[in-house]
Image 1 (tube, one colour):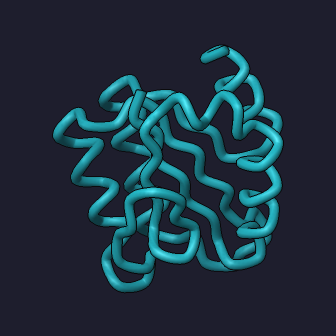
Image 2 (spheres, rainbow, N blue to C red):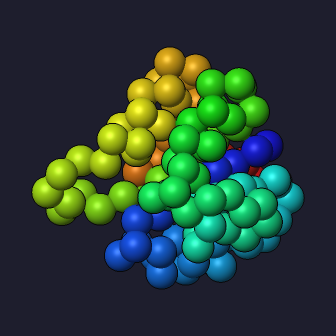
Length: 110
């Protein structure tokens, strides 16, 4: 499966911990991520178009799952994250916005 990893700045360490905890499962799949979150495939940083690149991969049916640890306390919702979530819904792609949901999705791959 092709899995996208996205994390806001204050959630990057959580994403690293998540990937470390589930590296045995994730290593069996192709991972892509925005620049500083990246593990295998590097895109531009989210602020410089990385989110749009992931959105395009969703629209072209090139991703099978999106794990997006966003900041729920952010005062202004991130438009790119909202677009990614909408595209996932439109294209029937599993989307996790928190660790609990991400664990369920990744464990389902095992």
